[in-house]
Image (cartoon, rainbow, N blue to C red):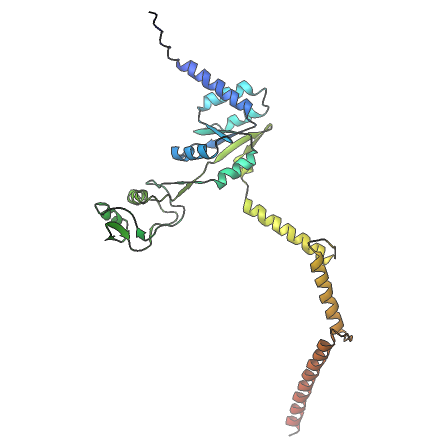
Length: 300
């Protein structure tokens, strides 16, 4: 009976060679290659993003030296890709996709992941523990609530929080005790996102500053431009479906005011013209009466 020889384990050099070849294939396959800062990125955060963007984005972690070797292998086919090497410092996460790098940046900004707090994290906003049933049975944990200033009572066999309590203010360092309580309550106050360092697309490498898109500011600029265009068209009496009603209303108002101020009789404006004349007459009579009183006082 023949025995099958066990496969020899690959040497470190062979493993590195396989990784470089795999990276080179990915670099050739995808239109957009981005580099994200891997520092402080938690495993759970990356897992959620992998599941959420499966089929759209591929995430890969590799040593910078191997990534540089892979870039060198495909640089002839991907002009400009070598510029990415200057961003390969510290720990990095490679992102492969066929969507626009600007869309990728917006996607990361909008898809922040909620994470449990850890001791030493900075509170992004005031962290509030709301009153109500915690679902936790009485026990030593009661003292933990007390240690962080959360008032409690026992009701129906569970620990009840008796009032809303701020356990960490925005900008404060979250203590180990606060982080522990938040974890027990299932509260995830930390918002995390991937931070792009640079991205390659169609021969160009874009830095993080270029990729940052202020959507709210862009929306305000569009609204301002639309409003300015509408004002120009209305004031210049340029008809359009969006301005026709406003132009007609403006013209009618101006015509109405002209008829009244010029005292031109018209069935529609005559009541207002007469009312205006009556008002002016009363004002004149009032002034004459006041002047007459002053003359009497001087004569007396």
